[in-house]
Image (cartoon, rainbow, N blue to C red; front, top):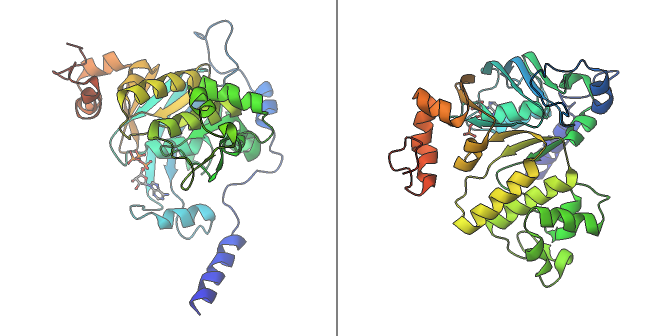
Length: 325
Ligand code: ATP
């Protein structure tokens, strides 16, 4: 009986209509971008990179309620701390210019992950719009949108399979040479070459154990292989030894170069380098600017810096005022 009940539940899920789907007449993102008016890029360099701007235009958002039967709402029901229907983003407005690195920081539950979910259109906004390269994400096919965006989550997910297949997950037609190039660029090529079976080495839970830093670099190698123009990244919080940390940082710099990136930042080096930091609190952008300006302002960022980032200076910034002693 229990099995039957569970089985019914499976069909219930399979029968659901996804809430997010292509609208009629949706175009591919690349075509729509050609037709879109150029975003306001007065101070962009003459040779603007191919990467598009990401714009949040007065975005409001509430997670779908349980009544809105959908896969998305089932996910939200599964979350213990969730409260579907309640607005969690209020008038979020910002632009990441082509090629910029925008860092999202803020306390837990502030809305940082929710912002990143809206870029890949995992949900639709309740008000306002999200645009990529001047095109509303609701007007393009999901397939073309998601092909353009590289998502790296905190915990790199590896399949119990060879390194080659784990990499091909990002681009099924990639050749071994392309895979090796991406691994080298992510500073993990030598490690893979040194493994007993090279690209055929099986990794994952029951395979070759990779360290946290190696997993992160493999995730970045995957991103390089996919070569998206937009990157959405949730930086890992896991503590790494300083050697792995430096290797991950180099891989990250390569992976983000020339791409428009939105990063939930947990590393001091990332916030220092960000072109723009958005401080999110209670679903709003409460401060914005670069690291130094925000520190001087003495607001929430300065406080977050003292509690989260300053200790990464290994005591070099003992006063927590952003000045390296
Ligand atoms: P953290 O740093 O802890 O990951 P965050 O800043 O990324 O937090 P979000 O995960 O975006 O915050 O959450 C913002 C708000 O939305 C919270 O109040 C959270 O409870 C709510 N929320 C998040 N995901 C869902 C969901 N799937 N369904 C309903 N509510 C959700």
